[in-house]
Amino acid sequence: MSLKEIIDTVPTFKSEEEKEKFLIVLGALSLRLISLAKASEVMGMDEDTFLKFLDAFGVEYSYLEYSDIGIERPWE
Image (cartoon, rainbow, N blue to C red; front, side, top):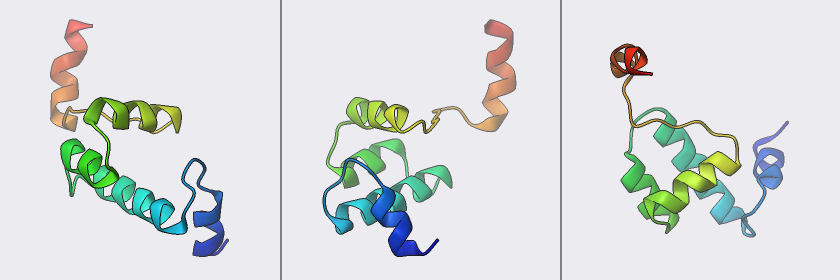
């Protein structure tokens, strides 16, 4: 599958530029290169809306660092 084909399969966004921006922001967020606040800003959404958007796409995002997860589990 080519990059163009991948970009074309991204739903919701109309323009190729918007689709590319979303994929770049998603990658940067996943790699923790940018914060959720910055990702939301780049996409032109507030944080809550962007989180709902990620959830609709099935993208799991947590404010927690991996080291925090062990601390949080006992509280569940």
